[in-house]
Image 1 (cartoon, helix red, strand yellow):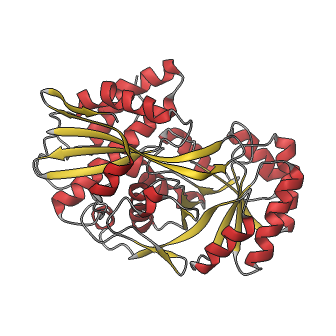
Image 2 (tube, helix red, strand yellow):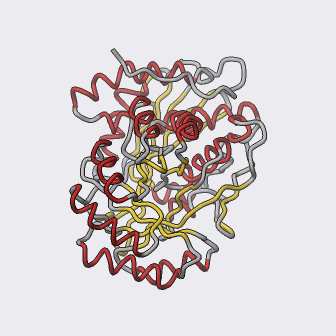
Amino acid sequence: MSEPLPDGPQHGPPQGPLPIDEVRVRVLEAPLPDPVRMSFAALAARRACLVEIRSGDLVGIGESWVNHPAWAWRERVATLAEGVVPLLLGADASGIGALRARLAGRLLPLGRQWGAPGPVWQAISGVDMALWDLAGKAARRPLAALLDGAPPRDVPVYASGIGPDRVEELTERALARGFRAVKVKIGFGAERDAAIVRAARAVAGDDIALFADANQAWTVGEAVRMCAILRDHGVRWCEEPVDGNALADLEDVHARTGMPLATGENVYTPEDFARYSASPAVAYIQPDTAKTGGVTTALDVGRAAPAHGTALALHCYSGALGVAAAAHVAAAAGAAWVELDVRDDPLRTELAVTAPEPSDGRLAVPSGPGLGLVIDEERAASRTVHSARWDRAGLKEKDTP
């Protein structure tokens, strides 16, 4: 049996069929002069896997998360080409819930046997985002307005990507851009972690909210010891403190420390999101529109979380499309926070003709139809490392430089 999936938000796409005529998959890459270090790996290049769905003259574009490992984009291209595209061509794009259920029914059983449900959900995320972008364009309305009739025009954002190196410099950059909250990367050993937190706090001062992300670096015992240090420096939440991210372990850490915890970027099924959101250990639930099931999942999670006293804080470590989708969902669901990486990322700042930029700790929700972004095709072409296009007759064009 397939994983059960909701039929999508109630403020759904416009009435009338939108037959899918063509699907395109593009992978863009921007090498980094200084790799970004996490506790588990380094990121040597920014990458974005774009999923484009055409119905008539309208094209919806989504993004599928392919940050790790470095070869993840190759897996995603194969999954989309061989597993997803045949299920999309000729289908009605206005039936987002039905299409999601179809993809889940066919692909998630394979994901379980493959041991890779995450990549399957990441592929579905890119499709779901593209379908909602297409729906907004068909309705000539911004996505946030399609999801919720009168959403706010901007949403609160915090600066992430600070540490383990350049802590002072990146914290200063965040403050100069008007952020009122910053998040540091930790999980590099107790002594260095403490130094990272101290450095960020010294620059930020006491009036700036400080969060920390361990990327599942610790055992329960290590997490308990580190959370005591974090509390001493006024850290307001610790994200993914425990290896494996098991809910029982998070509840143990919270019970022994009182530290508010955040998680969600590596949670995939509706049932698991419900369990984590309902736990008193999880103060902030963090779905990712490009990773954990798309716009539909993020909105459903955000709408359900307040019943448990849990706040929505959208995870986002993506390019311009992922950021825009997170902003629209945050506006529709009343999110407490949206993550915005403070480091340089050409796929976030240069991919769209006009990219969303923060001001005074808030991010404007794009006002154009759908996601509200127009791709700068010349810049996109210069970053493309793979491109393939299919119509109903099959593979139409493939270009892998």
